[in-house]
Length: 109
Length: 114
Picture (cartoon, rainbow over the protein chains, first blue to last red):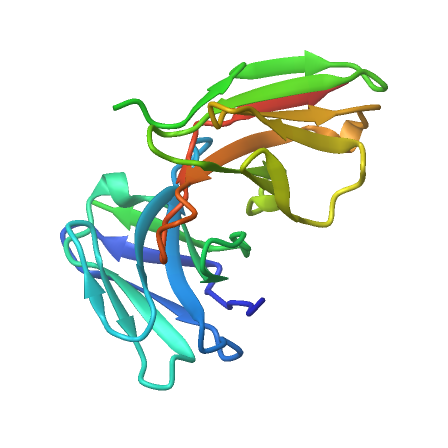
């Protein structure tokens, strides 16, 4: 299973875009990039996932580089409720999720 | 539509005891995965059940066992509890037949071993 590298923590001003980077240089061709977030003491919440193309949903956008070795999760207009730990995960279909330490995002007023 | 539910919410046990945690998957899901999350760490994969059989297993000792029932609900059993087993235990459900499926997590069971 490919491993991911994320910054330990980031700050973002409320209303601004939050850009969370992730490095997954050993990703295999059949591995997807998933993003989850976890608000304190709650279960992780699915955000978005992708294989090769950029993806967007109501929560966020996922930008994957052409060589697939890194990606960026974008929260377009961060709110205080987006303060959480964000996990970038690479995963084979249906398989286990391997969580790293994640990025602790603090959205400040 | 109820999401993933887990019971109990909190549990306190003493060393050497046994514990059973329960999980009901999201409606329509047939696969259940269990994770252990120690304080300050990311969740660690324990095992996954599909069609009442263990499909994948993480690096956990045999003291950790599970079961899946015909209605897709699942139990996690931990025998001979150690202090280090204190953690948040998370259950996640998914639909294995969907190619790129997300796992939906429950709120977790907080286990404290004294």
